[in-house]
Image (cartoon, rainbow, N blue to C red; front, side):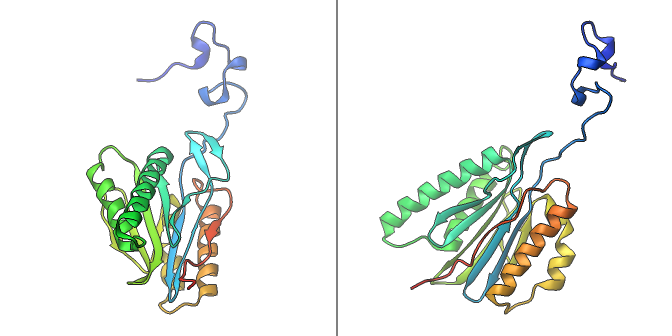
Length: 218
């Protein structure tokens, strides 16, 4: 069914109609939602980075959002999808990890934290829009990156990308990443990936926010 123009409705005039409803001389371009996440393992830890745009439909709500959530001293998660869903999940997991640290007397391992995220994302896969990357360092396995995309699957990867901007990065990451990269090389790779996606992906934006290597400082 063809919709009637705004001027056909009583009391509606093109001059006073918002541009997003088809009024005015020119309509404002649509701003899509999206995210770019990058995480890379190296010998002594991991490097993670993300863009900073949060959108509400066609409105950029925040240009400098922090999509990197600190869960413990050596574990972070990166969030893509619904900001409300992913922030709620991250807050719940951080609370559970703090309780587990008190109960067991030691920090939660990275793979345990990733499994906790995966369990929630899988059980509520029909209600949540959440793509998570859990990255960090522990004494058992060193630097680790776990990808938990929509649907609740979990897989460990030496380098992982997520969000709408990742579609522009698969070839670039495959050609640039290699095992045994140094800390500085991983930092440069993460920065280049995020900035490249921001330039190419209309749904990613803002600037690149990254966390320096998460390593054991003892």
